[in-house]
Amino acid sequence: MSTKQNMIDAYISMVEDRIDDGFEGSLLTFMFKDLKGSEEARKAQMEREVVRVYSLLLTRFCKRPTNTDIDEMPFFMGCVDWPVHKKVKKAIKGITNNDGMHFGGIYMLPPKTRTVMNLEDVVDRTMKPIMATGLLTSIHVKLMRDTPRKAAGYVLKSFDRLRIGNEEILILPRHHSEMSKKGA
Image 1 (tube, helix red, strand yellow):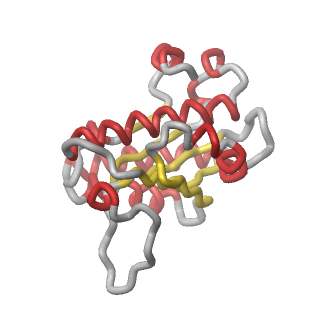
Image 2: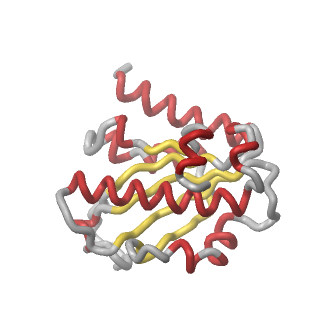
């Protein structure tokens, strides 16, 4: 088995383990306005924005994130992605921006949070601060209905196709000290 496949299996296990622990997963797609700079610079801007949104949402689900065990916090795994061209494709808002590059991921809520609302409702209610930087055109939330393996494989398709490296896969939370620096 290849190293790449071992890495993909490890990431899939991270998602499956949380599902087994009662987490609820949603697929997130972040669409961006046209960003300036090289592809690497645009990827970095996208990642910073996704970390900001994660931190913003985190406080909606955890009252005191720095006092919460990392295993009990919402989990995010994602990376940049590009559209897959098909014969018939619906127009997606912002798909032409950044040569189609966007950010996709899985956001997983632990069984116990400070609100009974699901991720989609929290994102809807938090839309104004989410969009405050002016970098996003939209954020789409879809409850994960496929198997965790299939959903995680879908999120990691850019890595599987060697479009990005392992270091470009974003896993949140990283650790408490970094989260407190980000204002979470």
